[in-house]
Amino acid sequence: MAGDPRRPAHLSAVSFAEPALRLTAAQHQAIVAHCFDGLPDEACGLLGGPLADELEPEGIVTSIFPCRNADASARTYTVDSRDLIKAMRAAESEGGDLIGVWHSHTHTDAYPSDTDVRQAAEPGWIYMIVSLKHPEPVTRAYRIRDGEITEVEIQIV
Ligand SMILES: [Zn+2]
Image (cartoon, rainbow, N blue to C red):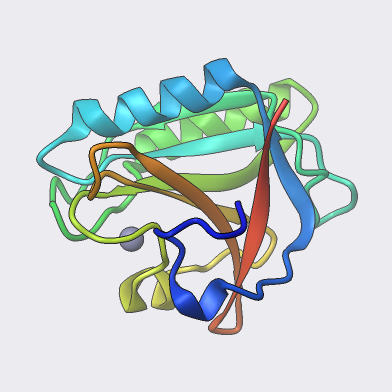
């Protein structure tokens, strides 16, 4: 990923937060497809996987849950509350929990907006953003804790 011309300059010497986010190519494709399906609005969904302890995900994604954007907006997203409950139950029934959320940026880079940072209520979650600004979608992931953004490496396994 080094030398990626789409990477914002301030991330050029990035050190990633642990753990890395690990998902399959099929999961990644389904997430990106869900983001395209949501156009012109932002799309969002939830990631399920095992926890290393009470708060910390192991980083492995075992399930993805495409959700409705209750805002139906091209600028903001709120995961539909019924979809959230359904995904939570499904993740728990697999012995894991929700470990993160993805959403799309239709016209901006794959970097958390001020609103994303303000609304990041789950310090244990991994926040994945799919940018559809360029012809090729760009996917990145972050931890957002106490207003501080740290990039998380995405490993397609
Ligand atoms: Zn956003």
